Image (cartoon, rainbow, N blue to C red; front, side, top):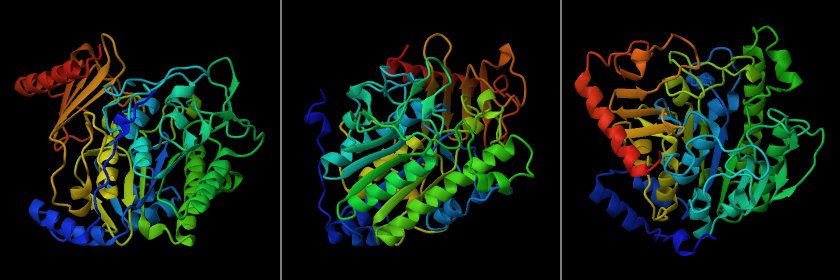
Length: 465
């Protein structure tokens, strides 16, 4: 059982003068004025997509996609160009988002089982939903979970008042079965109880659930985590979008149809916020969980990492650098871009600061992005960050320090270039080579030694072998 002490949250007073004075002390300038004038506790909506490539929105440089609704969201907020996923695979990324902790520290260094009864993120971890629920928010989860398939690790026991979706890594969008590793099993749940919607298209079911949650809770502070299972395989876009992209080559056309199908449903939910008069009091965060898939199940590709090497399941930029947007009209800047390095672990402390609640009393790796959101000149909150995928003798890992990036035991799922035994430590300077095509470790032994020491310190601190 999770203890009350673990969930303790302190709600700070929303006094305009106090916030302005604090901003003056901390050198924040004028930006707390708009924030402090806003409602006491903003609503929160996180839209977390699945396997969406680094530049797979028009506002990120895609030339062949129709993504009008997410492009409009970027126009009403701040778009990040150096946002990094907490990990390059699904479960670990979600653990980092939910807890504000490096996934390995949160007990999820790799994917958790997709079958009933599979253990997941340790129940003692404190999620963003638990943090906000303790502060009086009603909390909801819609879509993919993939953080545990046992009662204690499913959403309703991880801080969510309401949950609808699938617990494993993916489902067929019409039968709602998991078919990718036997035994095949039906995977659709509402509040821990199995439900059946045979033949109903899951992206539509998700949108309907989101609309109902917003309508039901429009007069209460709410937090909704919409973990969209798109454009993860199976690539099942609607006929409208399959027709729209019929002239694109495969597999891009299948992937593109699914992305635009998703964008259309995101538009429905954002429109509902406007209709309910909630948009100006709702912090909307959009992000992909990691880079695009190159697996056989997704026709070996379809997504686009642009200039970046790598894809899902590896730590080159194409596996970690992803599209991310936040929007709160009338409070945070609109139509602006931020180039500071940030991570998906940063959203929990960012939400805590905007909601004026104390973060969980645990060691967090995420840092608040509030100063960055309000100023293009604010420094990144991270001088150093660490990623680890897997455990044992040869996990993949990365240390990022400024523009330096050291990869240990790297893989390249984009297969842009071979990796040899000499590349077990792979060093790049992203300011000089964002494509990561040349290993400069041999020419910079002092940098390698310094970053390797940081890796060793993180491993010892996390205690994960």
